[in-house]
Image (cartoon, rainbow over all chains, first blue to last red):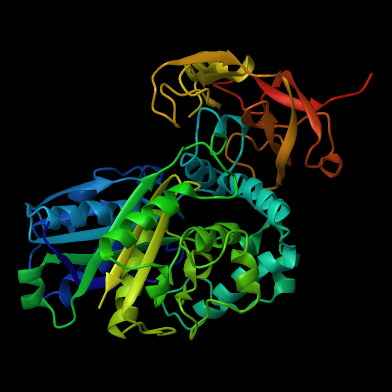
Length: 381
Length: 131
């Protein structure tokens, strides 16, 4: 297997951009990433996206390649719900590692602001089991609410302890120029925010977002030529769990996250103790708490409690979500996994324009559905 | 989109509570699977799940998904039915009366969701009333 390196990254600000289409968002990220990598034409494009059907557009690889002057290259779209970005990165990585291509552009793009909220919520619920869950009217927030109540009750976690995560994420995002939510909040603000799906309140949840992020992957030989600061893709793992929540073995765990992390750690020859900085998938506060546990950063049932005690901020090891995470940077679903990789690359290069924690080894963890399609990557300076 | 043929396809599973049981390792699950998630065996049979269970977790949805706007707030519960679980609407109960461990039983009711102008029926759960 050949080594793969990230030689260029780019992203748009995350937000609601009624004036920008899917192709325009993607082009902004693609041009930035290609410009960092010597503006050479890639061999292929892989697009991560979940819900472009809401904007009545599929066939995104052709759309974006053609719009950005790359007509004629190879490519396709990869879908894995909110984990589409991570899955697209896995596909792009594989194209380099297998030797099929030498330069691959991976772009994640999502546009959720096109339709009214109930229609977007219905689309997001397609990430769960439409035949058996959506048919009863349960939203994605509702599924996470079921997990949150179960987790809090099983592990004796208080409402205040659960609120510490969004407070930390909003604080981190204040310094991130790409973040969607730039507003300092308190635990009291979280507890007083409107209920979406009891016990999930507005500030427990990531926002609906538009955005695009891109990376250029290259073989070792090409990477040396194109970049002075290539970042090595040292480990990569993906694992699947049930689409439905009902048949999970344990409701307070994310088995696919654990399995994907084990694969990534093994491939990179490192463990959770070696990670300096991580960007994890905190679609909801409870998702963050369980993810910290499955990645080995917290003992089982202690994820939320450790956050409440002040762990995982800049200066701690690992620093988790210095970007502000899905919670406050925003969650353009199919692009999120690529945002995380771009952010960790910038951290390791010392170029992140927000809270810069530096470090040598970084991790990203991207979930699709309620942890049904999970990709973990280990990046190394 | 929910279509008439989709509800027709699903009626057995949505009304009769049909799950699957692995003939090799005994693993029971809902929704039913074509092969056992635990051991991979294709020797699975359809089984009827119990119609009485208890609430494992619940939520009250204040933001509806498209198609369910007529019934808000919607009460959703994760119900344990023997060795399986189901996610379902609760009915005949107030949001502040529900508790974890509450005994509930299956009932057939109208879905708040219309399909091409027609109503359809779906399984919901209601509190078990002691006689």
